[in-house]
Image 1 (cartoon, rainbow, N blue to C red):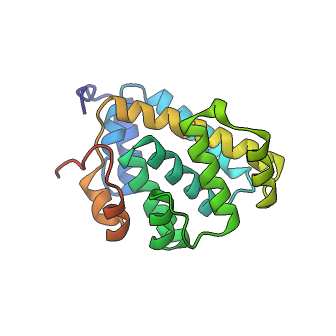
Image 2: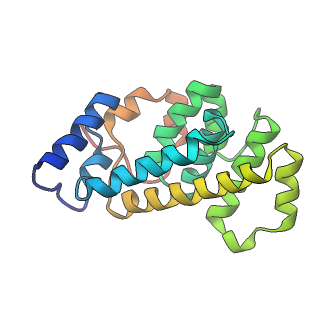
Length: 193
């Protein structure tokens, strides 16, 4: 990344331990966010607040993030959430969302991926017809709102990582199905171990 990690402190140690406990290694993005552990933890709490009370499934949340990250050109989140989507729906589904083909996806997944891409590309270009398409796929007004907030949330998180030059972890790349990592042809290359 373009900035050095902060000096060790009680707060950075807590953040690094959390990453190590959950991932098995300290993620590169954790080292960047260690400059403000309180903000990172705030992001995590907000994500939890948004996702745990949502009727959008983990699979649908992964579709939203993969489509958002791929449209933005963010390799890190495409890999991390591509792994999650592959676990939830299979590697072919993850590749379809990352490559914007939507092949083999159900109507809700296609609608959510399309919506995420539109919000990333041009939020002012959305229309009432887009809402009709989301409703036709079975999404409620609340789910459309939540999906939109989740896209915006992920954009903010990805923008910080990408702007600071945070590269995907080699451990992450090794854990992602090969066809998913091969589909991520954009963004920053993985860091060396």
